[in-house]
Image 1 (spheres, rainbow over the protein chains, first blue to last red):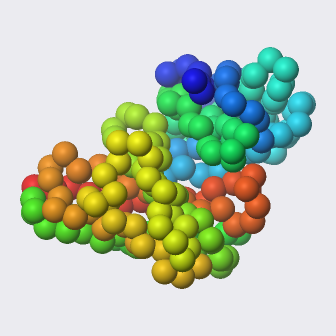
Image 2 (image 1 turned 120 degrees about the vertical axis):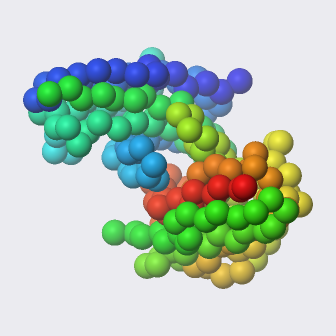
Length: 109
Length: 116
């Protein structure tokens, strides 16, 4: 079956750096997305990786290793507003989006 | 950037009534829209894929006669929850991609449905 794993919850300190990992096993691969979802709101797009390597976008970076079925989202200079759930989603060979359960990130002052 | 508008943001209805939720792509055409359901502290669950001009594709376990989807134009899809029951209370979110299959999804703001 298709499976995406990411930690349920993480805690980090304001101003610090946090890495949220995502491992996947899917039938085919057409890219990996990271979305941010604040409580009670809809998800918003953060990043898309389809080739191996690191994509940097401001304080957020996303890394992909297709051979390892692994990605991470790196958040730098954490701010209180970064407290949210972070969803990893993989586009399989049929272009179906497979969602992880999300990682709840708690930022402490 | 691409914007998806969803209406209403929240609705309270009585058990047995029907509720219609609209999803519009405001600045792009969407031949395909997706309807998700999300329970508290859980991830998104795809309910159905809405295809413009044809029947929606429902995920396993989702009752197509209960959750009616209409995608009459390239910018509008509607989800009607028929004969709603308290267990249908949830957060419903629509989304669409502006572009190719690997374009990121743009989500509506979601509709919080409470059935009393």
